[in-house]
Image (cartoon, rainbow, N blue to C red):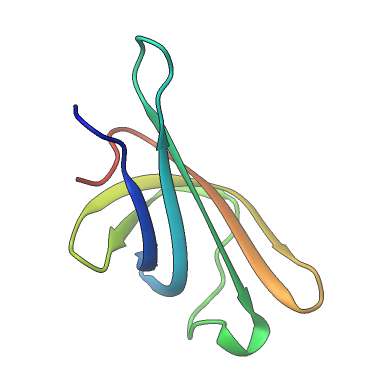
Length: 94
């Protein structure tokens, strides 16, 4: 595998279009690479049907059609913004 995945843009997670997702892949020595992501958006930007909860795995599809699976680690709300943290399960979307 050459290069690491780095993505910023919309993605569909568990069937819900999330407006701003960031993904990054991390090298881990000689072992397999891991990848993770985050999204944060204001209440007014919450997508229709938004109701993700920790768990999974659930499907993620990037705007360009690449796909993978993620575990939703955390969904939080600070009174103004929703934040979703997730970890990839298996290969990063290619």
